[in-house]
Length: 383
Image (cartoon, rainbow, N blue to C red; front, side, top):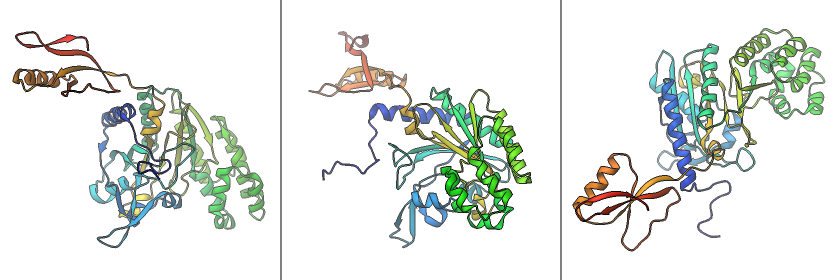
């Protein structure tokens, strides 16, 4: 096997693509800051007990594990940064007020999340801690749309769901509760034949509601339909009220409701959403409320947030235009060095031609050159 061959779904990022990703990262972090989010940088790996706290079985399966040769304990390479940021809020910052945190960095997955997806996404996201009201969920929703707009994407579909619907149904039927994991998987797959089989001994009301959930998909009118066909449990009524509130705040974004789309069910505690954009088969951003995660770190804090993959998002953007640059000769002449320093301090890209070589770049267009006019070094047009 060639020694340059990389593992499946792992790839280098070459100059023009890397610049797109990095410029997008900077502009998104700047937007987070305008909303008052503070940047944190969690470690790439940590003890598995901390890394997977409250994250659910799915995250466990996606996490690479290794043995720490210093302590002998099992460590994990982060597959998601949300739990890490929750730990920082609950255990390190230990604030009592509302806290907004953001982050950006690579994560690693044992398997790709979808067709052609990388196993090394570059994750960026924002989280709000300390406010249980829907105002925080609405801000996160607004921030998702603002981030996608900065990437030049205006056609966005938000898919909303709420874990409260299924949990209220399961709480009303002990037999259904025993099959929670199986029901979650079947609802997500919209596998009606298997749902009919597994629910045959459930209470008639709960059975019919579970069979109705896969069909409760569509625009805001789905909420009204759900109020008619689902039982009048308090948890269901609250969930539908919260969904309706957020749908009406979505502005120009297309919003769909899917009461059976329960990805992240074990992790989240309220509204969940996925953002889809043309050109990508998978969700470009995911988020929702996860109030219980901080409990394992010593403090139960209301929490909601989202994350997206910069590499996936950058794929939708046009190729980065070449940057104007200046070509300069290599020389030990002090006047030339001062001229180059002056240009760079002014924000110009100056590329010196090393002796005996021509410059080859994909990113830069050397449309100006530093030349000696007989008395001083000057800048003139032409490469």
